[in-house]
Length: 328
Image (cartoon, rainbow, N blue to C red; front, side, top):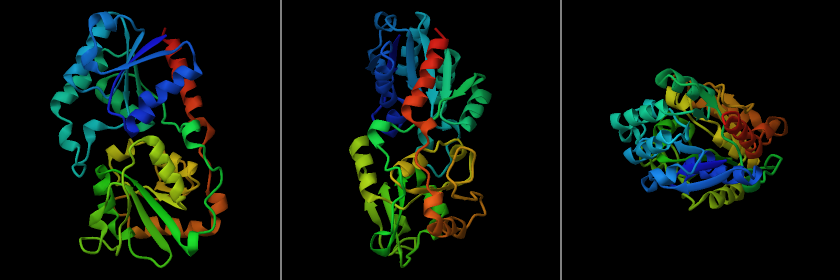
C-alpha cells in the first residue's frame, strides 16, 4: 500500500497528524510505504503511482490541484482535520488567514475524499454537517518512543513551590486574557509559560504577575519534549474559553502533561479525561481554575493518571491501518 503525503511545515500539527504518525505507521505495518513531498511537485505521472493521497487541512490551490490529479487517476483521497478552522474566534490571530478561498478549496477537497478523519468527536460532527461527508474520529496519540512517560506524578514540590505550566502559542492569547486574574503572584506557586510569551500577564500591562517565567519555543518536537520533562511540572493548566473552536480541540495538552508526570487542569468537556476539571463557562472566574489546583494537592497520587494506553500511537495507528485496509 503506497501513501503519498502532501507536505506541510514541520510543527505540532505535522507531528500529531502528518509525517510524525505516518513514519511509525510504516514501521508498524511493513506493507505501508510512505512518500512525502510538497503539493506543487505532483504531476499526473507521479500521482498515478500511489494507492492513497493524504492531505491535512488542504486549502491552497497547489494542494487542490495535487488532490485532483490523484483523484482523476483513481487514487483514493484521505482528508484530515485537527481544528474547526471555519469557526476560528475573533481573538485568534490566525482568524484572518482562513479566507473564503481556502474554505472553497476545502469544500472541493472534501468532495473528492474517500476517507475523512478528525481528531475529536465534536470536530467530526461539525465537519459532517458542513461538508456533507462521513467524518471518522481518529484521536491524537502520544508517541511511546518519543515521550517515554514517567508513569508517576511529580513528587514533593521543588523547594516547597508548586510548578504550574502553560504551554501553547499566541493563538491562545484570548484564552489567557479571559483567565487573566487566575495568574497572580502566590507564595508557593511558580507559573511557567512555555512557547508563546504572554507578556500582557505582567503587572506592567494588564496582568497580576511580577515576573513572567518564560521558556521559548523549541526547535523541534524532541527538544520540546525534553524541555517539558526537564520542567517536571506538578500541573499543566489548559485555560480555554467556551466556544465551538475550542470545543473541537483535542486533548494533546493533557496527554503531554500525563507523560511528564503532571496533572492536567482541563475544561469539563467530553474530549478531556483528567479527573481535575473546571467549569469552562463564560461566567467562570479564576476561583474555579485555581481551586481545582489547590484542592488537588492533597490528593495528587489519586488524581494523577498516566497517558492512556488506548491513546498510544501504536494503538491509534492500528486504527488508521484498519481504515485503510477496509477501503482497498
